[in-house]
Image (cartoon, rainbow over all chains, first blue to last red; front, side, top):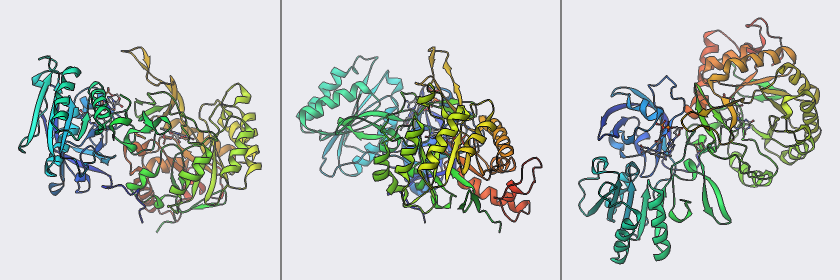
Length: 271
Length: 308
Ligand SMILES: Cc1cc2nc3c(=O)[nH]c(=O)nc-3n(C[C@H](O)[C@H](O)[C@H](O)COP(=O)(O)OP(=O)(O)OC[C@H]3O[C@@H](n4cnc5c(N)ncnc54)[C@H](O)[C@@H]3O)c2cc1C
Ligand SMILES: Cc1cc2nc3c(=O)[nH]c(=O)nc-3n(C[C@H](O)[C@H](O)[C@H](O)COP(=O)(O)O)c2cc1C
Ligand code: FES
């Protein structure tokens, strides 16, 4: 009998198949993968460890972590949105529809939506929006109002935004337009709080915006959660390479991003 | 059906496949049933809590990885009270890996972890020996023998001694471990290595130097298993770059009674199950009655005959 850790959904390690793989702008790629229903059971904020080369080759040797971008358990399909940054993602970008892909997941703790939240601010920068994308849909499905703030270098690099559900207010801020600096985002968020439209901050992708939200959350006594990144080898809490500093009861503590996170309480994160 | 049992110095294991220390934790139990394994070898613990090394703690290598994790440890007391109970959920024999800075400290820690539910102690002697200018115990025969003898006196549990591959004459260290009272040898730990980022001129590991593991080191450690098997009449647990059933069979032919799998689990968390099932098929295909015949029946002619 398997003795699980009590986590749900439980991860599976399998060879899935790439169904589609497309460039969405000059830096980001979108990939759809078909595997088992268990593989596709991921929740917003959870991630997968992906072998970035055709099934039996081992270059690069280690797998790379990517957030769930969308899940369709009924079709046993999951989607990813990623940015090509180095050896692993360059190699991943070469894989084609039909290629087998070794993948482990869903992994880690995702975002937890509190029942008493009526309206949340979802704040992401760059490819951090990949992580937030399924969260927006989940919040909307629970009847929670969402204000989505998307920060990017320029308009062409804004990742595909959640479409469809109305009731989602979207603000795009960019470096190119001079609208993305933390002070201006802070003013935007402060307005939301004052209007009573921000019960929590849910964020990913920017240390500077994280600090802004920590300040506001402390000032107004609001909830918040942040998805953190760290280099990973195993993704299952075994190797201790992915530790980061967090604020704990007795001061700064080391936590494994893959096992204790990747989503953490906003105030515990050391930005 | 092929008999997969092996015996490591009096301890019967239902099969020869187990995780390598530091590459396994309870999270793996979410992916497959850990009770299918021959044993569960836990991450090395130290007596006092330690935080581990600065980041980055891993770097990629060709067919493998470098690590300088540095044995972050909650300390022996937390281990016994908080961590060990989790692992008692599984029935597979539990092997506790220990490390200490002196022979005396090794003995004290061994006595502390000699508690019900522990099947064996693995002494990780690749750590710095404060009584020998910080050179690892495993790097010299005298230090090895002293540490092993101290642990041997402190506990009646089966004692496995894990050697370092970073030595000139591993057979000499194997004999020292035997003379100190080891029941089995684990061959081996990681190969000392480093890497530099040529763009930033920085070391790729926060600790500068670290240990190479994975398929890249397999031929080196396989040779050392062979040398140890010829040098001492102790069961040997092969460990280094094993990723497939063929790798495991190769180690057993070279003289290993069992195998530990480390880094392979990071790139395929089902690696140990696939190795186990593959070994069964391999044994059946070669008409072996027992998997232990790979080690003992002289299929690979130069190994000494041992009773597995
Ligand atoms: C939980 C989690 C979810 C993620 N989700 C996404 C996502 O949905 N889309 C996306 O584009 N990226 C995501 N990332 C970042 C992504 O994992 C890295 O961009 C990727 O590992 C880079 O690999 P590389 O070989 O191309 O880059 P290199 O820079 O060559 O990588 C060298 C090493 O550093 C590690 N590394 C480099 N950058 C990061 C990083 N930002 N985070 C963690 N490890 C890193 C690599 O894994 C590799 O081990 C996520 C990271 C984490 C931890
Ligand atoms: C991330 C990591 C952590 C490790 N931690 C330990 C440890 O705590 N104690 C130990 O004896 N060996 C440790 N090792 C070494 C492994 O147990 C094993 O000896 C080595 O990795 C070679 O086997 P492999 O090639 O199958 O990984 C560690 C290896 C890795 C990669
Ligand atoms: S990646 Fe191995 S512990 Fe987190």
